[in-house]
Image 1: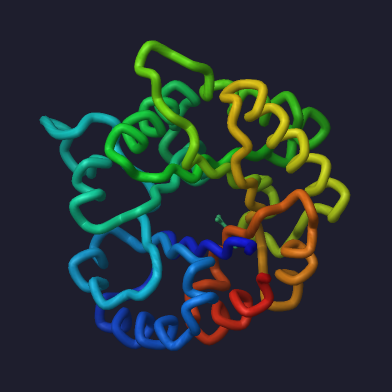
Image 2 (image 1 turned 90 degrees about the vertical axis):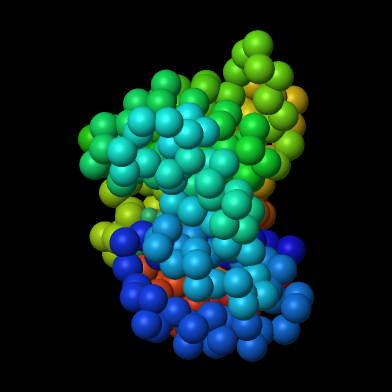
Length: 238
Ligand code: PGA
């Protein structure tokens, strides 16, 4: 079963969320099992009727304390989140998050029993060095004293230049990077973890990415905002 994850980013309104959830809830159980939707924090008080998994788009690495404006992994767990995205390029670039910070967030998520989706990927200027860039982003997965268990980790390969741009890498490129990621993660953690592709997925191209053998699913941004559209993509995943 391939996974279809949706990232709302800073979109949507609470006034529309019941309609959205009701529409997604109409899917049969076997379709609902594939999905997780990453909502804005403000939605979490309104989505207990969801028949699917949901998560947050980021978390802070301390459990509580004087961190104005931050939300901890412990708080997200209380809201019923099962997953959390860490290291999305919009956080790495827009909020200057380093691999060190992402490492702390990832470990905090796992310690609070959230499943992390670690995003990796190169910028346009780094396309030729993409394997080096991704290797460095993955190298946070080294064993440390905290004995964190990486069994529930998911990696999302999201080339920065493909996000929201309408441009996508070739199937061969995605296949090669996915293989590289899976092998490097095994080397670092001993675990075989799912690898997703994300960046400009639409109803017209979702099928071809879902068919890539080394890809375990997709992470959909803009195309998950409309429930009808997203359901069409979900149905393509088998
Ligand atoms: P996009 O975003 O599908 O809108 O390109 C993907 C993502 O950033 O996760």
